[in-house]
Image (cartoon, one colour):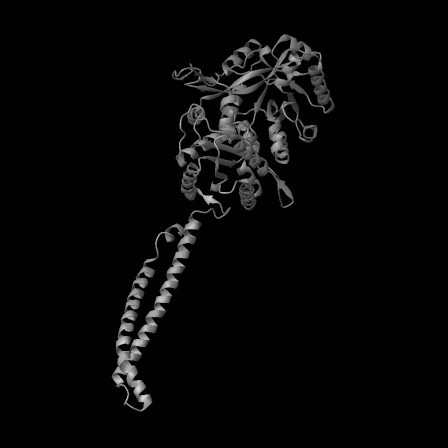
Length: 560
């Protein structure tokens, strides 16, 4: 509405201004008539006062009074017209300012930043300088907003804008593009790129300072993408187009997000190819979830004391028609970013329950869940529904959570774990030792087992001394003290296996016991070991895609 009002005066005011111009013309004509009439009437009035004349006629006197009234009317309407037009100009300026300003932060908005940037680029060129455009995005702001409420979210946005504005050089531009995304534009000398880096680091540090609200400290970080119209190292002239610079800075910002967030990145042409690949990957993942291309594989879990097969951990694999068999390191983070990790994980868990129903009752199934799923208050109910649907004993299922899940919200994770354990499901803490492991959290959370990270186990053999072995021995002693059984991941060779066997009673898994296998291969393995469920006839596992790399079409197995 404000944008429309800023474009032209209302039609009623234009019509009234036209009438007032007519009134001004009438007043001007009245002045001329006053001059003519007054030249005849005033001398007669003077003669009457002097006693030498009879005075003016009544008709001329009335005409003179009418001329005076018309002059007063016209002049007053003219003053009113000037006042109204002045008010209108002020209103137009205010409407234009509001149309180009973000009402929450008082920064420029997406509509106004482009022309302002064009002007800054032109001025920088005249001063023999270059322009740099930064896209600034708050990391994980949606979680802050959802957890604390929109009022606190708005306060964080205003505080962020104030902290950024306080550090920008005079004459710079700052805009809120929408949501939690900002843009700032500055001019700089050709050899001053390091000053831009230093400014960006100051921005990152300033925004990451805690904000105290309602007795709690809220921390936010930013990812910054930077683009400029500085010529490239190859001598190619950079684009001066504002939209092009914003596009490049946006690409660089997403690259900074991928690098771990809370950092900055300058645009490079290779990033555009990567972004295009990410877009194609997301579409392929979405299609893969829809068409059932994601399937569970299984890694053996062995009792190291007896060498007996006691269970399997489900590992996700993507049978992509174009890329072949893809490991989860590639698609899990992307699926989490897309918000479809819960659907994908539930599909895999359901298929794993179908597969594991054919195993002997002593064989357990371990499944990994995303931190996103642990934030879902209905996750335990969804899992219970799957267990009931496929008549799978909860005692045979083990859910593995990562340490990352704990740090996000210990209370919520603890509540979810308790809910799962009440169903009879066992809980395992995965990747212990990979990050900042907290013994207090290990003791506080109601878990049933923890797993030593595979990279940590690998260091036992890489360490020239015996410090790695001592650390693992200490972790095993910790498990004994807390009465928690332990699984060692990443057992790659016989030497590591023998060393771990000497340290205590453990479960182990890794390539030493074989590569992850499909449901069909697991079925065959358990058949040879006489570890299948007792049934009237062996049910066939769910069909698996026979995937060949380089774009071969996927085919359904006849076993499906």
